[in-house]
Image 1 (tube, rainbow, N blue to C red):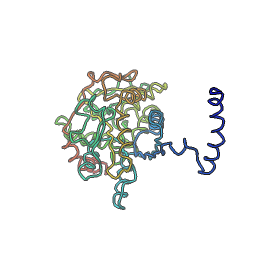
Image 2: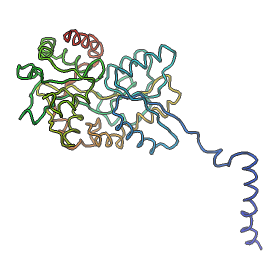
Image 3: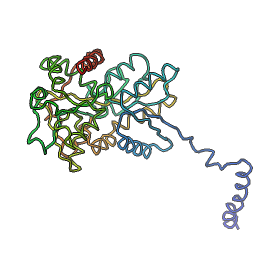
Length: 338
């Protein structure tokens, strides 16, 4: 009899539970389920790449739904400035091109200090000493060339001022591309380049396109024989069969580390920190490598066809000086175009 009562007990409870659910309007399980959080990310990442990142993050972080606003860095900065003027930044996380942008946001109180763990696996130069941002990938700017037009490309930045390349160079607009704006400041600070080099470059009548994507397409199509462009764009086009090759300039390669940070206005600080931490986790960095980026972690490998970091002459200028001189550098470049 005891065993029979034990078996019957759950059957007696089932209708009672059903009545309770009907009376309360929801099951106990639904009542106990954690509310879904919505995380808003502002980014300059290509749409396909950020979609992959979001998918991987959401899979590893149940209950967090990520919404993305994607635009070039210049447009993001304009949007953020307008939101600050109206009282509050709407996004939780920013993932965009250059350190100077993040240094400015940290200085004016727009960013919160990060609370993450994976930053200990990174070289210190990719981590803000004050804790407001962290680099997420290494994006060098290189010289790409059309292999149908040239047997070999320019070996250096200095080479681009040669008469043979006049009218044959494409480059991104520094008013739109954060990486291009950063590069402009780096070039001006390099003793071997500077204003004299930039004057000669502009005298060679480069075609200034909206961003890095169109520059890569122009070189691949042959409308421009040479392009100043971020390396992953050229490598991805080459992998798809386009006649384009990558050259890392011998006189130094500028790069951005595409920092990420959490806005101080965010009401989802914990989820925001989790998103940033995921980007620099081993899983997040291996995804970056799959997306043709050079990683900020040494244990994530490198993209197929890309050189090891030790083989690239990366330029590491003083970031504070770059931040202070970036607007002046872009203004100088634009003045030369007139």
